[in-house]
Length: 216
Image (cartoon, rainbow, N blue to C red; front, side, top):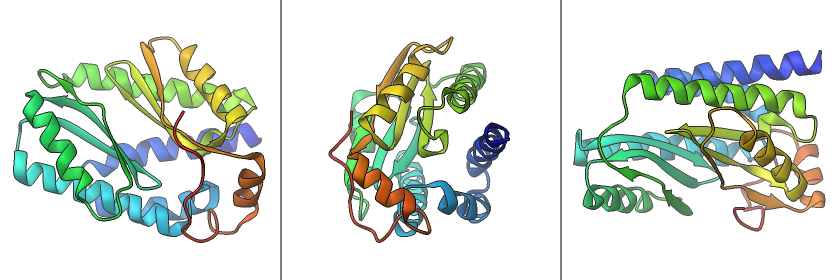
């Protein structure tokens, strides 16, 4: 029963992520209630992440137009930039724009230089993401709702606030999923005591303090 509930929540989160490209405000509003209940980030951090993603997409689109295919994923104010840039200069400019957004702590600029991916490529990436999430439900060594999965060109990026043991288990799931070319863990590592404190706190964590010891 627990696994079915987790799978349903993960599916809902995946659908909401897909909707956000067209309906960012509506999707964010619908998703907030779900996120708060199962997220180790504070409510303030979750809200700020939604705002950072919107600002990044808007500012890059306004300044760079169609010079690439850009995705922005913010987790605890650390931003992953994925996709393709038309040139090395464009890649660097995207990184600079995002870094200048207020409250952004870290930028992981994982853009590749080249032509934009096709719809077929993006559909395949979405399928890989769904497989990683599905297999995470059955793993039993970490809560899959604590892990954000982003796939670009077969590369799987993992974000979240996990203990080292949880991170190792999540990485192993991704590495052994068919179609995955590489895994890039960008976790914030918590001590077991920090994890217990956040899990016990109401509303997805207490306060807006920074947690963890850095990405893996």
